[in-house]
Each structure stands twice: as C-alpha cells, then as structure tokens.
Image (cartoon, rainbow, N blue to C red; front, side):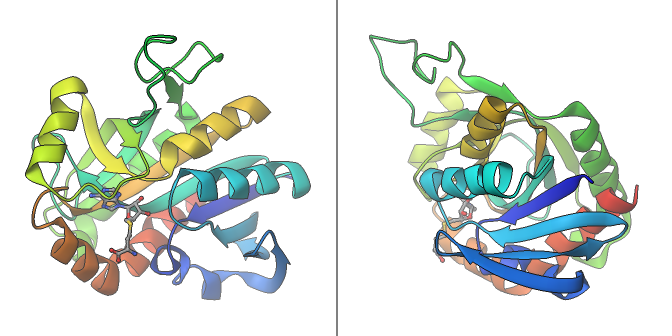
Length: 238
Ligand code: SAH
C-alpha cells in the first residue's frame, strides 16, 4: 500500500488538514506527532516538522525510513522573491537549493558537498498535480482572490528573510529564485538520498522585505490553514 506523507513546518500549515483524516491515529516519535489516516482515497501520514532545515530533515528521514512513506508533499508559506510573486500567490517548486550552503573554495557555491549538486528536483507528476490544484484554487478560492500560480526555483536557508537588503542580495545571485523559505531544500536532499518522490507547494505570506514580519504573522493567522488544506486536498483528488 502506498503511503503519502504530508508535511508542514508550523501548526497553522497542517491544522486544517488534521480533522479531515479518517480513522485518525497518532504516534509520537523524535518529539513529533505523526498522524495516520485516510484522506481522499490515500493512506496519509500528516506531521508538523518544525522550522528550519534540520527539523525538516529529521522528520523526512523518519517518514521515509521508519514509516516507509512512498512520496512526500510539503505544504506551507514562503516569502516571495521573484518579480510579480505577490502575497497570496502559490508557488510550486520545480527545483530547490539551500541558499546558505557555501563550502567555497572546496566546492562550488551552493553545492551540497560530495553530492555534486546544488539543485534537487521535485517529482514532476506530483508537482503537476499541485500546480493544477493551485491554479484552480487561485482562480476560484476566496482566500486566493486574484492570485497567480508560479513554478520554478524555491530556495531554503536557516534564516527568516525580512529585509529588502537581504532579499535583494539573494535575487542578485539567484535571479531565478521565486520564493524563500526554511525547509524545502532539506526535504529535497533527504528524499533524493532515499530515492523517493516529493513535491513542495508554498503560498506567499510576505515579500521577504522590511514588512515581512507583520505580513507573515497576519497571513499565518488568517489564511495559511485553509489555504494549505484546500491545495493539498485538490491535488489528492486530482
Ligand atoms: N514563528 C516565527 C518564525 C517563523 S519562520 C514567527 O512567528 O515569526 C517562517 C516560516 O515560514 C518558516 O517555516 C519558513 O519556511 C516560512 N517563511 C515564510 N516567509 C519566509 C521568509 N520571508 N523567509 C524565510 N522563511 C519564510
């Protein structure tokens, strides 16, 4: 039986999905609550991984190894970097990179040492399902009025990017980056090592600029939960 892991970093990113699980059963491991249940015809494990790359990597390893998840969907919020990536928009990652990985001059900038790569690609099939779901949601859903769906590079690092100066700096060196967050590229690296498919969908909570802190808190409080639920459920049903 295939088992689909659904992961978010914060409570709000998974809260609205939990009541949707049929036959809910919870197991605690490595300080996290893993919720098992049925969702729209899928056997699902839902978990809040915590914030940052290490928290995301630990959780992903447990999901893939101890619980044998066959694929992983990450859902959450992110800061918009690319031109025209606005609050409320949806970004589906085609590839992910750790923007704070730098072992120069031993390895090229951003390359994960000894892997020979900086970018880790998301699964095209799951990403396409999320993109179709995100597109439909952007067009019809009340939380996502006038929103746009974007697909491309998402960058991750252990920093909440909350100044114009820092987001400009990121864009100057990574001009194709659409969004910045703190977990996706770590999940991507672990899934790559386990050779399991994964996809990342992020709704834009802020523009990673000087207003990011306030925008982020408002978005997470008011819309992150239903937004996450609706895009994931639409992707599962597709
Ligand atoms: N709980 C703290 C910090 C949240 S960190 C607070 O309330 O301020 C931000 C979380 O949202 C991370 O899980 C990250 O993946 C995502 N995120 C949203 N906007 C971001 C940004 N501008 N920079 C980095 N991560 C961002």
